[in-house]
Length: 347
Image (cartoon, rainbow, N blue to C red; front, side, top):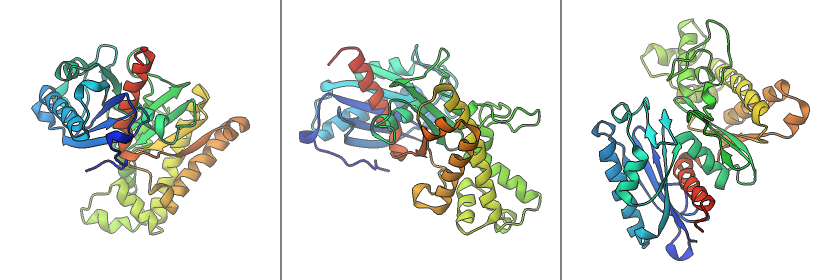
């Protein structure tokens, strides 16, 4: 898999240079990025989670050196490295705590390990926060001072940036937008990872869409998905989208309901920080701008938000899809490293 960013030669790049590392459960994306957010080189490697974090760090470091060599850049000229990983984490101490998708990586000092393996300082961030910073730096949010990003995938991640600053929080749990409560009833749904009741993730993630759809099919919903379900086919959020594209009313109703819960969560976040921009990223965009279903989804969120908030807030808030896709993580990690580098007066 490659980046969607155009690769530029070293002769067109602007110093200083940064490396962005985006750690996922299956793969790790690493990019060499210049001061303007342009990508010089990129590589995706397997996470190989069961091999443990130390082995992964060694392969990250080797890949970082290889990318610099491929671009013709002396590795010593890297200004700083950005590292984004899934939580839970202790950002201040550079520790992974108990990330659910990385059971063999618990309680590991990943920031210091990568610093030792590369000889460069590392800026450590939550992966969703890194994606948010990528969109803020060179994506949908590049003309805004503040922004909220929601990443819609297996779960719901998020990132909040206020006046250029990421909200990490005292417990490294800041910007966990998927755990905003949208249903306080005793029988509210449970979220994907932590089991929290009534959290946004329980209603607006791909896992939630799949579970809610299956429950509806089990209850006898009239849908083109019934045959697929009865044949044992996996009913994913993608499959719901495909049915909706074909005009399936049940699938469209599921997507509309997802939009309503997202609007509730977005309203709460906007009322807290008033960012002026809310960006929807992640794999579950139901086709995004290029699909009638995707635009129906987006417009439903916008209309529900307008009903829930104040008129001046609605007029002053943009809700839109993300721009960078799967590249946001490594670009944002590099951007956070750049931000730290500039803040420390190392220009």
